[in-house]
Image (tube, rainbow, N blue to C red; front, side):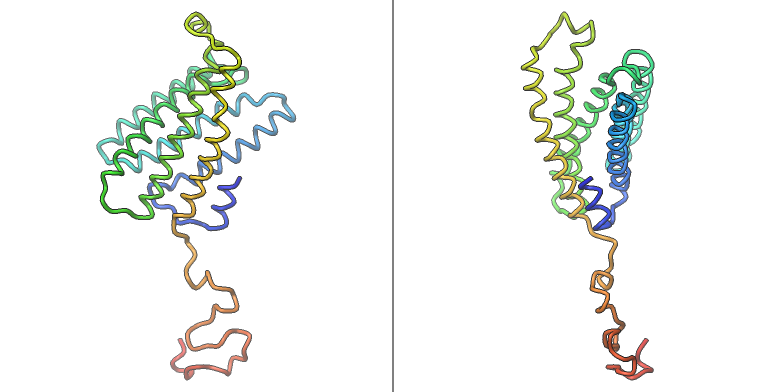
Length: 240
């Protein structure tokens, strides 16, 4: 809600590379409301987790498709198609849409997002000059890396043991599962902070004239609108 409020207040001018960020923020808020409705009225919010994974990973991957050079766009798109297939198949078979959390598709999607964010962070430090747009994409990659790497770690130790195939490999204790998930709230706060910083770094759509108070928005040669119109600084024929 905080990033959405700042975005609506500042109306930042998103560059083409980050044009999907408003949809990412809007989808996050919408799914948070759906989660509350599912818990309160249907006693089932599991489908929200499935669609949260779909929207999150899709918007971030397509943002990186816009950011990365042309030679990397098709491979990234191919991996997204694989993710979409995993999300659909696992939701219909192993991780049912209405019963189980979508552990498999979430781990795959999060892992790929982490790889993309690390790749871009390493790439951006090779640039000599900086700009607001580049700083914004760096902040975007930092929050993607921090949040999705931490949530992947929590999923690995909390959800995987419920699968039969992993029960014989490792079965962490309850205290260790809680310990593995403990950094999540802090990293979530850091993610929101980086997102807010990104929204502040971007320029706004508001022109300098519109940024002034309304009583100062007068045309060249006119006194403020509170004055009678006959009081002009310039002759009438010079006032455009």
